[in-house]
Image 1 (cartoon, rainbow, N blue to C red):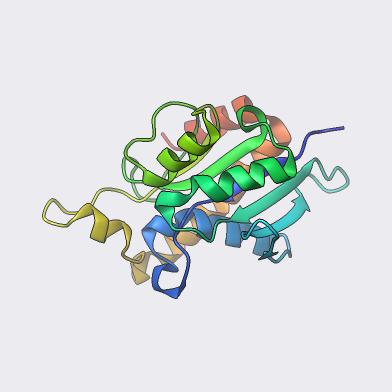
Image 2 (spheres, rainbow, N blue to C red):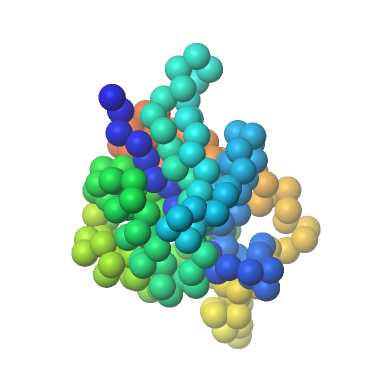
Length: 198
């Protein structure tokens, strides 16, 4: 029997932060759940979770637990550790974190396993609480702010209204990337996603 996957989108809770660049992970999870006809619901871990199967028609593939954390970004590790424990997930094998990435061009995607957190507070908290950096990440590029703009203000600002079509395309590709990881395995998915992003 195939092991289930846990796919967690990072972001900040509440209307104030909805649709901001820092919530790219939340947006990707919402979009994928919606396209699969699923709805995230309150879970006993305090997060929002939807369980579904991703795969080709007729071959549903392994169970996938999509989750959005209701903690603030810098404490993402606490609910992540709860979800990992609840679902019995091996972080090195079946955990995928979806997050915004300043060091990638806007709307570009990259898959990565392990390595540093690049100054991302959510990833730092997760690594500390899991006791490992060896987990997969789907990085959604948000680009760099103007040199005069505070990066903190930039990540907490909303995606431009004129770029909603481009954002939708990026979320669509993120959903496909998640599906690829689950159905093809991380290495093959990484080759496909990262070669498309060059």
